Length: 339
Ligand code: KG4
Ligand code: ZN
Image (cartoon, rainbow, N blue to C red; front, side):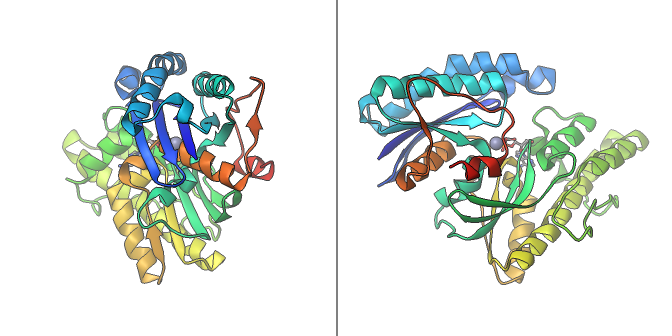
């Protein structure tokens, strides 16, 4: 079965083709970073307009790369939420129109489910069940994943998401959007032990997280120090986030009795976090899996893949007759319950 996947929930247009027999055939991405950089964050209207410009050429490109034509497709999967309404609508309407014209099913996928399942595209893939740590620009949560569609929330951030904390802290340090990668590059040259930043909720006894206090602590440090101290501030900030996530990951495995940790979402690209989690989980006798680096951030491959899994298991809700909806706010468990 050949599935085209379209991701357009935020500032990346991602298109991919997944074959249930031979895996990922093609995967193309257009990032809008340059478009939003001057504004210090994503401008929704500009995002939607750019998705419109990019999506059809990217579909052509992936088909060509996979050596396939539109009529070879067996289904079209797209991100139906959560995300920016206008941006989601671009991917959804293109996917639904294509599916209608080709007379194949359209599958609306939850963006976080795409992230959660993306480590299964790695080699070797993890096996169910596993604890997933989802750390992106909009979400930070621990989930117990027993199978496709079986997601139980173990804990989540009570304020900022981990990626949001990276982005806001980077902004305080004068780094450009999106701040996460820039901050971690700066941190590589700094001393992570110079500033003792708080480890919020580290010993709260549950699996919830909090990052906004950390950002406030950094803003005070920035006011009291000079730009030459910024690498040390960046490194100390990163060390605090990594510490808390490692500690809670250990608790999550202990609480669930599961042996595997799977890390997904943009912050999962962070090298210090990857190294620390690997050490932590191995010390506990478990295994840790990360998606391939390029699949950590938003992409079409994870959407094509999640769509294909649902079609294979017949746990999808396909729309028909050109009626569809997008869900800018969408709870993953509600979505899973309705599957
Ligand atoms: O998963 P993602 O691409 O988009 C969302 O669904 O949110 O995650 C983007 C987030 C941004 O906040 C970005 O700064 C962060 O992931 N990020 C990183 C790194 N690469 C991306 N944060 C820390 N270190 C990185 N290397
Ligand atoms: Zn994402």
